[in-house]
Amino acid sequence: MSEQDATPPWKAEAEAHKRAMPLQRLTGNGMDYADVVELYRLVDDGTPWSDAAERLGDINRARAEDAVGAGHRATAISWYRAAAACYRVGQVPLPDDAEQKRRMYRKLIDDYGAAGVLEDPPVEHVEIPWGSGALCGWLLRPRGVPAPATVIIMGGFDGWREEYHVGATYLRDRGIAALLVDGPGQGETRLFQGITMDHDVDAAFSVIIDYLIADGRVGSTVAIWGNSMGGFLAALVASRDPRVAACVVNGGTNRPAEILDRFHRFTAKIQPLLGIDDPEAATAAMNEYVLTPEDLQHLTSPLLMLHGTPDRVFLVENARALFDAAGAEDKTFLEWPDGDHCIYNHSHEKHVRVADWLADRLAPGAH
Image (tube, rainbow, N blue to C red; front, side, top):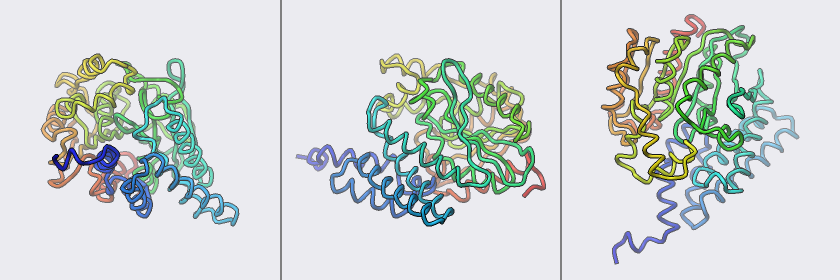
C-alpha cells in the first residue's frame, strides 16, 4: 500500500484545507496567528475543519463580549474581528445548504458588524437592491474626510468580502472610503439573497456605483479593486462603465475558466457561484466569461495589476494578456517572482503598493 493510500480520508481533507488556506493567507487577511496555529493543530488531531474554526470563533466572541462589559472598546473590536475571521475561514468547505454554514455565516456577519458599530465612523452594512434581492456590503469611511473617493473591493469564486477588511483599512488610513461587497454569486448576496452570477454581473456593479454616487456621505469618485476572479470582474466593469476612476486587478485573469484546465474539481466552486447544479453545464457557462482584446481596449481608466510568477490558479501570462490589451495609458504591472496567488505572502507590501497607487490617483495630497 502506498503512503498516499494509507492516508485516512479525514487527514487528506485536512491537508487539502491547509493548502487552500495557508498561514500567510489567513494571517494576512485578518486571522490571529495563534488561531491559525490552533486551527491547524485541531484538524491535525482529527477535529473537522469547520468545527475547529467555529470553536475558536466562539472563544473570541466571548472575549469580545467581556471587553465590551469592561469598557475596552478597541479590544472588543479586535476580538470581534478575530471571531469573524474564524467563522469566515471555517465555513469555506461546507455546502450552501448546510445548516452549519449558514449559522457560521450569520455569526460572521454579526461579529464583523458588532466590531463595526464600535468604530468611528461606524462600519455600516448596506443592501443595494438588485433583481429579486440585494447586493450586500460593508461601507468603511475615513474619519474627518468630507465626500471621500470610494473603492469597491470584492473577492472571487467564493467572494468573502470580509477577507479584504485589512486592505480596506490601508485605504481608510489614506482618506479613502471602501465598500467591501459580495457581488452576484458571492457570500451573503448568494447565501441569503439568492442572487447568483450571470452575464448581467457588470450591470450589478454599475448599480453599486449608482448607489455610491447618490450617497451624500461619500463623493462621486469611484474606483474598483478585484481579487482573484474578482480581478476579472473589476476589469470587466472598468471596460464597460466609464465612471470607474481607477482599476486594480490582484491575481486576476482574462479568462476565469482557465483554472478548470488544471483543476477540474474546482467545478464544485463554480456551480454555486453560477447557480448551476450540473457540473458540465457550469463549466460550459464559465467558459463564456472572457475578456477579449476588443473588450479591453475600452478599459481606459488607470490600471494596476499585481501577480505572482508561480501562480497556478491564474497564470501570469493570462494576466499579462489582460494588461497588454487594456486601453489605459496609465497602467502598471507589478510581478513578484515568489508571489503566491493574490500575493498573500507579501501582504503588507501588496497593501501599501495598492493603497498608495490609488491614493495618488483618487486623493492626491490626502496622505
